[in-house]
Length: 176
Length: 400
Image (cartoon, rainbow over all chains, first blue to last red; front, side, top):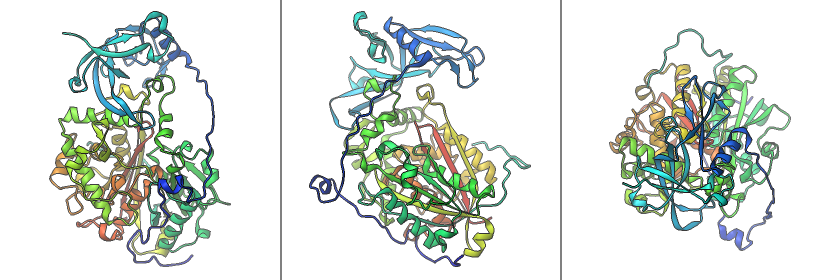
């Protein structure tokens, strides 16, 4: 084995050849392009299927664990802390509290949105404290949203609901 | 932070582990080199510093983030030859952004177990293959059933966490922006830096809104790059150098994937990982015993959040330390002296170059212009990732 480390400042040099977007667009570098088309169908599983079917009926369902005493949402078939099957299902209210929120100016591809959307973690009334789901807020100005704000679900019409998280269109402030 | 004192042998290891060399490529938004070529460049530099050749390497650990960026499955197989992994035991580890410190942790257990006396750790990321922007690949991190129908952007979770952190401790965005200002300025002294610049708090606060409170200059950029480390047994280290840097503690932990059920104001995943690493390193008061720190800083608030998780500041205290200049390179607790992800760049797994490699270089007094002013004995580096739930921590010391 070779002996002796060099007494140097590290990293001693910076290698790599930077390119700009233009180098690609104008074909200045050699590259290959592909657009894979891969399709998936995800089964929702035992717990989330029941949750989604609940949404279709206009209900938010949670589960409880008698060992740790938590009422959980989104529902799951086993308590991840006690690592045992849950002890039953509970219908929760369709009201809750804003735990945290963000005003998003970007879509999933980081492209600008025409109008910002307000996203929030909403803890659901009837579940244990801080048990929340992620969803959208509307019928409120971005500057008027605050942590601790009470909100209520705005549902799609019964015939439009399909058993999806979007069966709740958004959440709006509880008046008064 | 309370660290449990353990006498007796909690962690059984066969031998101590030293770091004797490190290397990295430049970090840039888009590099012409392939992942294999980048890995080769980083490893070449690490071998040169250590003064060994690839023939001396017994085992290889490779770290790289989601295959989705590359549009190529089984990336570890694709990267094998560039990683120096042919014809020897080779494995890939992956915990999202946490890989930058998890890969050297895996290298540590290869050597500490006695299975290898010389282990090469290589981390690589080529985010630019996902075109035109890697954000389009990032969105596949979201739960397909409950999250994706809401058209989320990955930034959302960080914005939600940042807002909660600011709310609980009543922290102003101005104080958080100081981290971005500091790290981008520190990066001016790093030869590999992508976004090193002198900016002001106002620049951050006036930058383009992404998902408020997160603005453009609160965020590190996507990058291409690679970084490598050489980890060896004590008898090998003695042959190579009088001043190796020792790995004295490692820790890792994950919090639940039900992230909307957690209180996001405090990174419990980091605190748990740090407890494990400190217990192993016999550190009971991290704020006093750690001389230099590289917490993971993909967002400016994350450096503060992670300092608190690492016990380097009390809950809510990190912004105060930052405002008082404690975390500057000439401060009492230099933090992200490399320039971090915010200044040097964020090639996910390859951020090892500004985390584990930087702490090694700082403790070996080889950081050049980036060398912190104070005398250093012990340093900590940390990374974070997956669905903002994993903490990976490594403690190093230049005293055995």
